[in-house]
Amino acid sequence: MRSKLVPAAAAVVALGAFGWAQTAGAGGRAETTVTIKAPGEVFGYVKSPKPNKCAKNRKVVVFQKKASGDVRKGSDEASKVGDRYMWSIGNPGLNGKKIYAKAPKTPDCQADKSPTIVAG
Image (cartoon, rainbow, N blue to C red; front, side, top):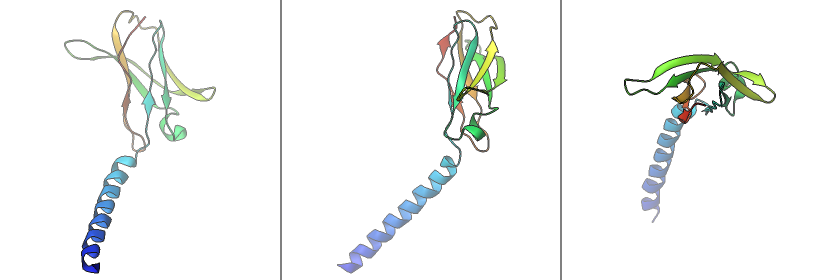
C-alpha cells in the first residue's frame, strides 16, 4: 500500500510547487482597483492593499471610447485625500461621451481599468 501512496504524494507536492511558482510570478504584483466618476469633473480613486506602492502617486489615464479607436483625454497622479487616493482631470468637456480610466501596471502593482461610463 505504501508504494501507491509515495507516487501520489510526490504528484501532489509537484503540482503544489508548480502552482505556487505560477502564483508567485502573477501574485508578485499587488492588486489595484481604479474607479471613475464624471458628473462634470472627471475623477476617481485608486485602491490597493499596498497603498504606498500602488495608489500613492499612481498614474491614471482617461480614455474616450471611439469606433476608430480609444483616444487619450488626460492623466493625473493619485494624491491622498483623507484616507483614499484620488485622481482628477477636471472638466475636459466629455459630457455624453463614453469614458474609462486605466492605471498601467508597475513593477510592484497590477494594472486595472475602470468600467466604461457615460460622462455627465
